[in-house]
Amino acid sequence: MARFLRPLLRGTTYTRLLHLWVPMLFTSVWLFIDMSKPWVPGVLLIPLGLIPAVRRGEGVQAQFMLARGGGESAFSVAPSATWRDRWRTVLWLEIRLVGGWVACGLSVWLPLISAELINVSLGHPTTDNPFVPVSHPHWAYALLFSFPLLALYGAVIGLGELITAIARRLLGPSQSERLATLEERTDQLLERNRIARELHDSIGHALTVAVVQAGAARAAGDPAFTDRALGAIEDTGRAALEDLERVLGVLRETERPVSSRPTLTEADRLLESARASGAKVDAEVTGPVETVPGPVSREGYRILQESLTNVLRHAGSVPARVRIEVQDGGLVLEVRNPLTAEISGPGRGSGLRGIRERAALLGGRARTGPDDGDWQVHVELPLR
Image 1 (cartoon, one colour):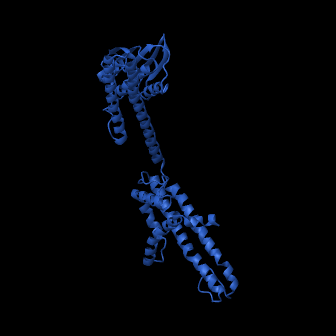
Image 2 (image 1 turned 45 degrees about the vertical axis):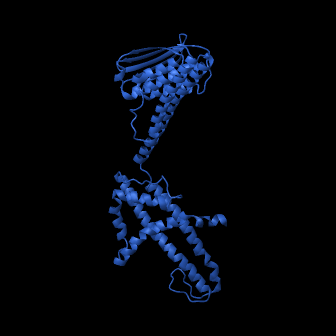
Image 3 (image 1 turned 90 degrees about the vertical axis):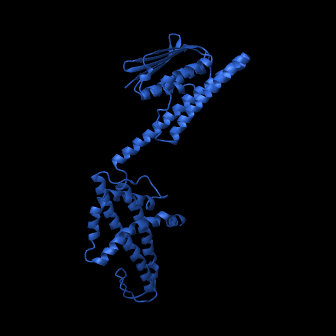
């Protein structure tokens, strides 16, 4: 019994019924004007539904009166963008009007039938109710008074579910709106992945340098070396904080430009940071690096940063050779270091995966792995 009565405790049961009643306000006004032509409101709904903004209004009403919880993405709240959407809106308005007629009729006559059955069972003569043609009152009619109420219960619940299902069909997002939503969701996922890579590269590099410097300073026992190590840790930490502020700025402001991110013209900062950590870095830069397009230069900086971070994390203070070459139509980044016994560290493998992802997003390619006794990261990126 409790489950049977549960729909009566839901607010949507009554908001859906009210949603069906709303068109009857306009219809009632028209019936006061000319009762002989009740079909006129249905004709007037045709040009009304062709107005683009009407679809938005109907969608907002459906969200707050038909959906549970006060809102649902299955209903479009955008104006009609195509003629197909306009005609779908017209069809919806006509169905809503017919549903309003049915809901009002049942809401009025079914309670009247129930009251009439009780009246007849008490021995009173029947009134002009066409649905209760009783000529002789009898107490047995009291046994039937609950059936119209049960029918009213089923009609209210059923019409509400039916009108909601039709609304999802006719007021739901069109194919172009679904495509736009999918593209927006894809852009959000890509942006999240980019931010995750930014955090991994910048913060991971800073922490790796700090750990290597701190370990070297403790093992050296030289105050002068310790001072230099602490200075390098401070500089690396400040640079990491700047990178973190850039990434957080992207999170706070969706329209913030990415031009403030570091580019390959600032590669010297990475090289000096690696050298300060004990690595012997030999760099070779060929070609006009400053002419590399912004997106390629920014991603190239992050690839170089992650490559040097992997050298410090997994190989330690070993000689490393860096080659940055700007060719006709392409950028080549290469970092090589001697293969040594692997130094365990957190995040092993995720950095190389990030390098390959960055290269793939720009239409380039990346090779990582052993090569002629060295560990090599070789990346080729198109400039267009």
